[in-house]
Image (cartoon, rainbow, N blue to C red; front, side):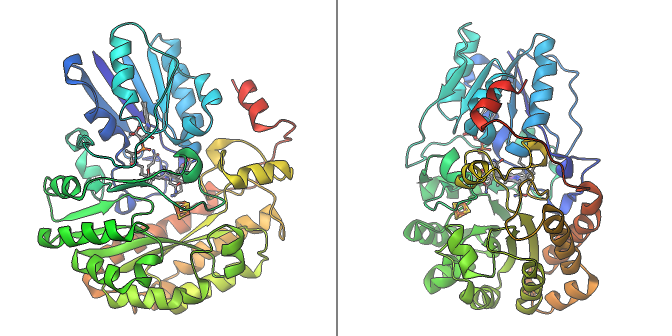
Length: 452
Ligand code: B12
Ligand code: SF4
C-alpha cells in the first residue's frame, strides 16, 4: 500500500511565496508521528510532503492520502483533497480544524479523524486495507501517553528546517483561555508521557539540542521538575513553551536552566491585567511580567513573547504601550498577533452571537489578519496597529536596545531569529493588504452545511 501524507501551509508560511524564514522553521511532529503509527503488517510505503518547506507536488501515485489541517490551512487542504478525490484517490483529513468542524471537513474527504489519532489512524488503515473504511474515527486520549511511537524523522528533508529535533512531553492544557482552541479541540485533556520515554527519545537525537512543542508543559509542576531533573545528565540545550509559572517557581526555574533550557515562548498576550482577566488568562500577572522576564534572563533563558491585540477593552493606545514594554524589558523576540476567533472557541461563539465576525474565509484566520469587528477601534486601525508594532520592534534601534539584555549563551540563535522576524515584519504589510468582509447571515452550523 502507498500512503502519501501532506501538510499544506498558509500563505505566510508557504515555502517560496511565504515570509517565514528557515531560521524560524522547526519540523512539526504531525506527519512524522502519523508515519510512525502505520501498522507494520500493512507493508506500506509512506511519503510525506510539508508545504512549509517545499511546494506540494500532486503528481504521485498513492492508494490513500492523509492531509492535516489547522484552521488557516483548511481551505488549501480542502482544495488539494477535492483535486485528489476527483482523480479517484481516497483522502483522509485530520488535525485541529477537522476536529473543530467535522461536518465541514467531511465534505472534502472519504474519512475524517477527530482528535489525537494514536488509536484511530492504525484502525482506519486496517479498515481501508480490508475495504471497510468508515466516514469518521474518533477516540478519546487518555491521561498518560505511554508507548507513543517515535516520530519518523528520517522522512524529513532535514536541511530545510532550522531543526528536526522537535519533541513533545505533554499534550493539552488545564487552562481555558477564551481565544484558545486547545480546551475545545482536545476537550480539556492535560496528559503527559512517562519521563523515561521522553529521555529515551531525546537520546536518539543527532545534535545536542531539542525543541519542545508542548503548549503548556509546566502546569503539572511535579512532572516538569521530574523531567528537567532527568534531562540534566543529557547536557542538551533546548527551547520550548511555558506560562509565567516557570519564572514564578524558583526551583522549577533553576531545574529548567540546569537541564539546558535556553529559550521559552510565553503567551504574555497583554500588558494589562484587565485584558488578561477578560480573556480568562487570570493566572498571569501583568504587574509581574517585568520581574518574570528579569528572572528568566538571569538564568540564561531568552524569551519569545507573544502579544495579542484587539481585545474588547483595548483602545488604540495598546500598540504603543506594548512596544514600549517590549523595549524597556528587553524581550528577546517579540511576536504580535491579532485576537482570532478560531471556530470552536468561546471567543468565536461570543463574537458570532454579537454579529462581529467579518467573514469565515479560514485562510485569513492566521492571526496576522483582522477577521472581526473590534470594540474600541476599527478593523483597519487594528490591522495598522499590528503592523506598526511589528515594524517598531524590528527596527535596528529596537533590536539593538533589546540586544543589550540578551543572554550571551544564546547569541547565534538570538541574532538569526531576530533577523528572521525583521524580514517577516518588513514583508507583512504586502501579505495583509486590506480588510476582507462578507455578509454573514448564517451560524457556523448552517455554514458548515453549505460550504462546498
Ligand atoms: C508546528 C506548529 C505549527 C507549524 C506548522 C503547522 C501546520 N500544520 O501547518 C507552523 C509554525 C507553520 C504553525 C503556524 C501556526 N500555528 Co501552529 N502549531 C504547531 C504546533 C506547535 C505543533 C504541531 C505538532 O507537531 N503537534 C504534534 C502532533 C503529534 O499533534 P497534531 O499535529 O495535533 O497531530 C495529531 C492529531 O491532531 C492527528 N492528526 C493531525 N493531522 C492529521 C491528519 C490525518 C490524516 C490524521 C489521520 C490525523 C491527524 O494525529 C496526530 C497524532 O495524534 C501546534 C501545537 C501542538 N502542540 O500541537 C500549533 C497549532 C497547531 N498552531 C496553531 C496556530 C494558532 C498557529 C498559527 C495561526 C499562529 C502561530 N502560532 O503562528 C499559525 C498559522 C499558520 C496558518 N497559516 O494557518 C494552533 C491551531 C489553531 C487552529 N484552530 O488552527 C495550535 C493548535 C496551537 C495553539 N495554540 O492553539 N504552527
Ligand atoms: S493559551 Fe496557553 S495557557 Fe491558555 S488555554 Fe491555550 S495553551 Fe492553555
